[in-house]
Length: 64
Image (tube, rainbow, N blue to C red; front, top):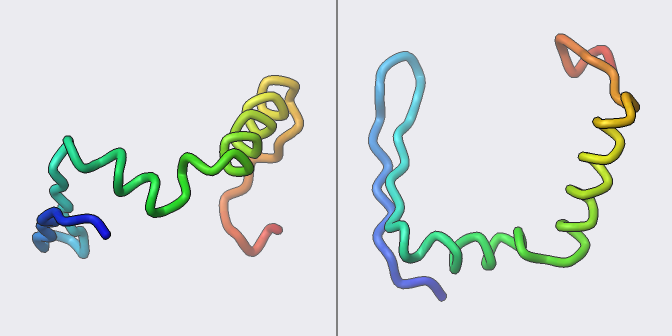
């Protein structure tokens, strides 16, 4: 598991500030599966769809 200090500070207006050691960021991303080949493929497909205009702008999730 990742040995790192993650600092979470409450900011104003219902916001939080999260601080993570930059040297541990890649390990954390790997733990969350952000380097998973399926995830990378889905990002590439999303970019391709966006460039081809295959998207719909929405203002709320209720529109889905």
